[in-house]
Image: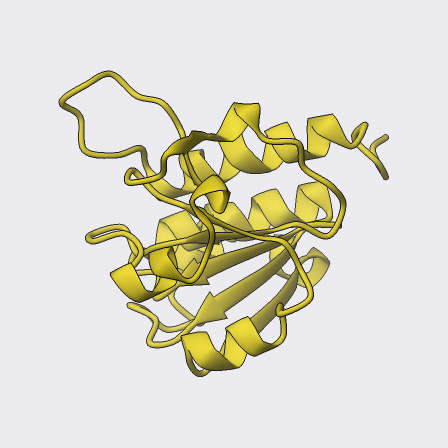
Length: 154
């Protein structure tokens, strides 16, 4: 239904939480190398519990490899630098959300690769740096899923 792309994620528990989130929402997860951890990491496995088998996950060698497989999808870059609030966008099945690494966010070349309207942000109190990555993915993914009527939901 939706695709979540993590560009060079760094913190295993965040990615583990996102694996679990994607398994429970039907979203497909894409990780772009280099990863800041091994996929066998204990913290990753602990956070994802036994949801790894229920999640659809693909690891891509580079941004270019990943982006090529989404050229026909609407792509949203989620960033503190986004000009559009995430909750003011009308999402559709098949939309794709790209999130950057925890320590530095999305690089300028990815931000420039999407239109200004597709560079979205989650509002926060002024002066704060950013939300935890797994929390930001949850907020955006659940809003998109809500808008399409929570398809495949029990």
